[in-house]
Image (cartoon, rainbow over all chains, first blue to last red):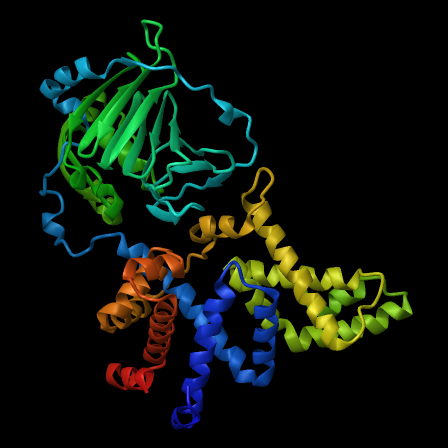
Length: 315
Length: 195
């Protein structure tokens, strides 16, 4: 910047410019000692420098609030919220396609030994009551739904993740050398560079593939004594049942099926008990249905996680 | 948090050399505590914890056996101690084992570390509006960096721009938002940013 430009700008603006650059430099996790020393010198130059830096640090933190609201659609009028019906949330609703697919999926493959049990360094992304996005060390993106936590272990030749409960969406950074494996109870989902969703349920796991192809391996032996693997492509959902150790694959509208990422939960003809169980993950106050007859009532509609309490009142 | 003088009194009050150093540290505290807290907060993103770590750093300094010398060296040392404490704190929070690559771990937990602030509805609306007022490229850079937690190289790749350009969009967006928060009109703030 030339000296002419420099002088024509007022001093305050100049300071803001420097302070905002310092914010980014100091915010960088890889900041060096030299960065810190230079920053200290800059702070020493004028007491207002630090004040400007403080203001930006506050702004930067406050702007996090937009993150939360960005994932929640609030523009739909209240009166429409319950009547929009959209999606088949679970594939057990589509028995015809399922029967055909079942025949396709029983392929025998050797199960890999599970060396992941031995590796120690693991981190956990903790559960919260709202959806949360995070970038993993390899650049992959993950969106966790409410009350969901994952364990991450990227130290070996494989990128191992463990989903013990809840639902998570993964957009995997392509890396052929390091397969990305999500362990979810009875099954493991392996991807190289795709986007998919894994959801754990009390009686099984569903895997929804948005992009590319994933391979799903059973971690327990099937009843015939052989381990199994399945492949699911984009636009398909695999539903694994732990009871029968079987899986079915059916096509699915992924944008609707993955609508939870933007704070919408859609159901078609779903037992109220299952809907409530799902919604309880998003709420501080748990709803308990005492009468089993009520739990069996069917619900069709979309629930916005941002206005759960209203929905419960309406029901 | 305890006032510094009280900490001071608790640390080996009978030692004369200690007393000299304590008074040197006391002035260090007065002069640099604000900077120190900002420094730690850039790492921890939590005001409360940043204050705690700052305090811990002074306690550590008071417990040293040898006096680290000149004021500037003392300050340098204080920041080193605080940095180490902050890194330890991050480790403690999330690890159940050995962590080798703290940098990437930082990225991973950026989201979790961020302090959830409750903003008044009015203030939130102002921030939203200010971001919405920015030109498209600025908004795009802001979304990628701030809302989706991409790194600068990642955002630059996605926008097909140089990293320097993305930084420029972000710093200008920040200045614009700051000026709007300080009560400047949209037009006035934008003119200033562009000047």
